[in-house]
Amino acid sequence: MSLLDEAIRSRIGTSLPPQRFEVTRSDLRKYAVATGQRQARYRDGDEAPLLFLFSALMPVLPLEELLEDGRQPDSTLLPELPLKRIMAGGSEYQVHRRIVAGDVLVLRQILADLYEKQGTEGPLIFLVFENRFETEAGEPVVTERLTRIAR
Amino acid sequence: MSDNTMPPVGQALPERRFTPGTVQLFLYNAAIWNPHRIHYDLPYTQQQEDHPALLVDGPLQGDWLTQLIYDWMGEGDELLAFGYSNRRAAYVGDELVARGEVSAVDGERITLALQVLNGQGRATTLGHATVRRAACR
Image 1 (cartoon, chains in turn yellow, orange):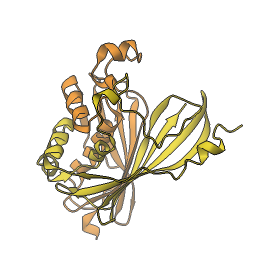
Image 2: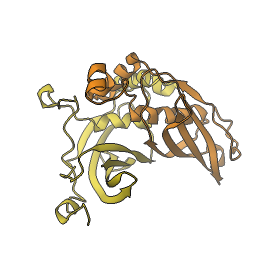
Image 3: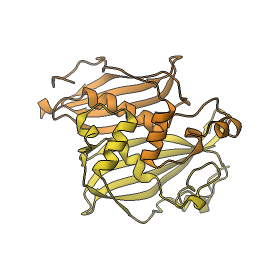
């Protein structure tokens, strides 16, 4: 019997409102130091390393909205699932062009897919989010497919 | 840095070693705005989440794999695609090594296989990438 009923499956294709953000030289320099970056174009804040984009996915919320474990509440794209423990699965990025200081990007997040598999220790639900980073004119910059796994 | 000739399959990228400490973890999580306590609150991490030590962020290990690529890329090379997945926990104080090698060459495109290994030689993160070599355009 499937763990994914019609109500859960109906969430495939839902999206969050577009989120606009600026890529600042100051943020890039801090990120480069924190990650141990060696390349001057990143250390000087001229260009964004690819994984800098992970920071754009982190909501900035008031302290009182954070959970007991410190985290921000889960994305509203995440449906109520019969499996509650959610782990990171990984990310796949397609890079359309480099990101430089001063870029203003728009992030569009979609719940792209939900599917289940039988793992060695029980059933697993895979949640695939598509994160499209675009220019304000709609040109693709980076497309990420991020997978999370519920068990 | 690469000399912009096409590399043979099996060629290793220069490896990087990382021994993340609490200061680096603090700065990284501040930079990405991640307030999850498993990265800075040791009593909570041990008592509530049953980990032996503070956890090294999965995306930080993903970043380290991209750094292997950026350090190796030549002038004008472009990173076209990258993927990673975290396979087991890595902890503050672990001695981690990031390695990569050329796994395929197809025209101007070079495919790389990447991994972060812990002190026991087990992969904490696996990755892959496609780079377009400038000299072939």
